[in-house]
Every structure is written in structure tokens, then in C-alpha cells.
Length: 124
Image (tube, rainbow, N blue to C red):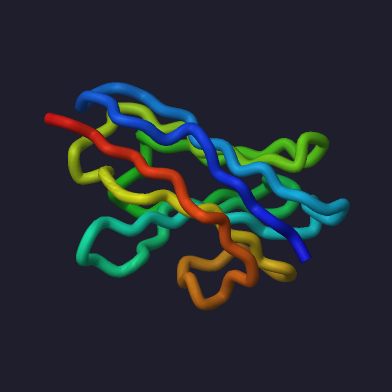
């Protein structure tokens, strides 16, 4: 089992950058595919980005391609989401998630563990 704790959210103006971090407990972090999701008020949780265990492959939703970068440091048990050129539409609670085996997926139901979320608010 793994516990996930997100940090790095905040209130920023449009065009600014933030870096989210997700620290994982446990000794098997490197075996998990990791994902970032977000949920805005009144909307369903949506996929943002994901990364394979060895960082060999990354997935992004179209709306963040070229602006967001997912990365991980297995030695630090941490996954990151670098967010540049933020827009008001990026406002949401951001969650990291871990998938015990296989490739990362775009659907929340295919992830086994979740963090508590961190709020990102982008003002216009």
C-alpha cells in the first residue's frame, strides 16, 4: 500500500507557473505508474498527465500539452507536475494517483491509491 501527499498548490495569476509535488510513502514507489488528475467544482475528475514507472513514457491531456510536464524522482519517492502558462480553466483541485501495475491510464477507476488533493486557483 502507498500513501500520497500532494503539495504546491496556490493562487496565481494567469500566465504564472506552479510546480505540484506528490510524495509517496513505501518502498515500492518505483513500481507504480503515476498520474495527475484534476476536478473543478461541479465537474467530473479528469485526467491531466501520467508517467510510467521508469519515466520512459508520458501521457497528457490535449489541453495541457506544451504547458505541463510530469516527472518523477524514484529516489525521492516523488512525482511532480510542472505547470506553466496557467489559465483560469486550469483552476481545480489536483490529485495524484498511483497504479499498482501496468501502464498508466487516463481513467480514474484504473488507479489504486489517491492523495487528498491540492487546490490550484488561477485568476484572470
